[in-house]
Amino acid sequence: MLAELGPRAATFPTAAHAASWVGVCPGRNESAGHSISDTSPKGNRPMWRVLNQCAWAAVRTKDTYWQHLFRRLTAKIGVNQALWAVAHRLLRLVWMILHDSVEYRELGPCGPDPERVRRRIERMLAELRKRGVHFQLMPVAP
Image (cartoon, rainbow, N blue to C red; front, top):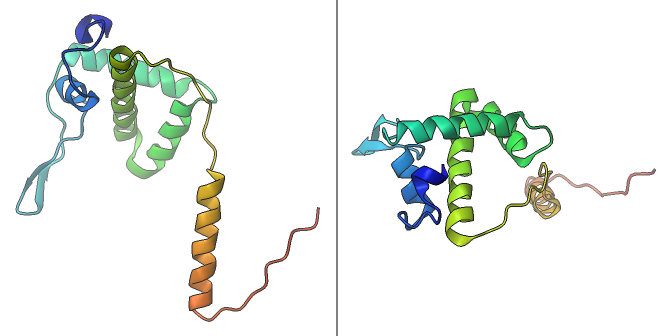
C-alpha cells in the first residue's frame, strides 16, 4: 500500500480521492431518480486485492472494531458488501495515517453508546406518552 499511495499519500487531497482511485468507493449511476447501477469504479486492481486481504484479516481478528463493524454490516447488506465497506474504511484510515501522521489505536469493539441509548429511550417514552400510554418508571431491584 505504501508503494502505491506514496509515503505521505500526497497525491490524493482527500481520503475520498484515494478510495475512488483504488475503486472501493460506492458507485452510483443514476438518471432521473432511477438507479441504473451501483457498481464501484474499476480502479487499481492490485491495490484493491491487497486491501481486500487486509479487510479479511481485520474482520477475523477477535474483539476488534473491524470485526464488530463487519458483523453489524453483514446483517444489513451481506458478506461481500460488508467486506467492501470495511475495505473502504481501512483505506480511509491508511490515508489518514500517511497523510496526517495520525497514530492508530485499537479501541476494541464499540458497545452501545450510553448517550445514544438514553436518547432512544427518551424518544420511545415520549412516543408512548403521545399515544396515551401512562406508566411509571421504577428502578430494577438487584
